[in-house]
Length: 234
Length: 234
DNA sequence: CGCTGCTTTGATTCGTATCAATAGCAGTGG
DNA sequence: CCACTGCTATTGATACGAATCAAAGCAGCG
Image 1 (cartoon, rainbow over the protein chains, first blue to last red):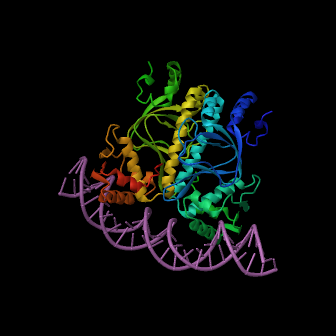
Image 2: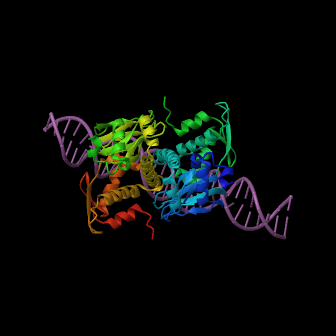
Image 3: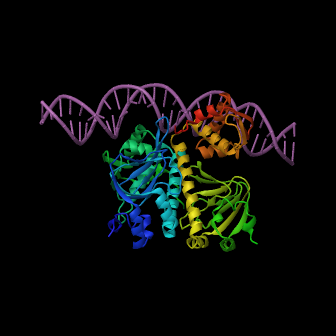
């Protein structure tokens, strides 16, 4: 009876491809950690010696340049894979946004294991392709979108994820933000002041309500979509 | 004797992992095309039915939003893989920047083949991980860098790739730009006018020379690096 | 020569960053 | 319960950088 059996991320992580026996082998290589909110799992520029799965919590990938400007490159959720297998150094930090549980492996050992388990590599490939798609979407936002479009777009993305599937289309969606304004700014490539102003603006035009700093209610989704200027295939 | 044997990209593409026999099987699925400069291989929003390798030439991945703003998401060179295996629709266009040769496969057929050839999937995984790294680097540029930093950074990247390995460190590097100003602007998330002004500025401060529109000489690499504000691990 | 397309330069506008002050809120201890 | 502290968010004034609008320069080519 190993730790994987009761792992919360089991069904979503790349491990889903393994038989109980194989899982047992992999498990022997791994270690589970708990990380406090704000703690850095891996520093930008350091050699990437660990890879692994997120079991619980939310982390971010980020880079800071010499001027201190910080940019979030992606968010990592339970079931997602972190780290860089197959021998490159990582050029970004991995930081926990909330308290998080991760399951890590020494990179070299994981590489060997993956090489001899094609099903695992296949899952990892699918996941990486998905990561790439999402990263590219994000990229468009950073390259060409205005502050309003960025904030509206992010709220829509969260709202879509948060909406109960049985919800009627026009109904107000309510959700808690996963992080504070500074984090949002780093994600969107803006400053905290600009993010704050956009929130106020979206409230004033009746797209959203902000009952408290961490909660948002999408009152008029159509207006919000207009602001986001999303590409809708016809 | 199949077409792969004399393929220029053979050594660099994911096919390098296959035995002659396997290569033959894969070859039977594929078709070679020549694409004119400016032609679109795949439209943003359309179902992605083709995947393949670039044999020759340069292509770009790009998105356009409803307002007509265009953003380049990445460049594709010989040996690179294009398209989205394993069933997702592509949300970007693939456009040839120069005349190009590609070797394409119907997506479904390629998926099947890959599933039964772990070595191929391994190569594809490595390549995708590399793509992801490069995309994330790009992302930082779009999120937080000034116009000068973007242009200087791009020139440095090209210069580094173009420099002969035996070149002495301080010597001027000379290269041709792979595309015109508008393309550069789309890559950097700027307008053509801004790109042009930055070229002029870099010339005035003595970082580069511009003997003609398509050629650049890096006169003072140190100055250029200052402008790019790159993160140099100490 | 006069076209056409691409690039550079100039004048102006607009949007976001920056700087600075204030406001809201949670926790602490009197 | 209230003052005090520290932190995060909002709001305001201003500066700066890039977009936009407009015009002129330059090359290739019929």
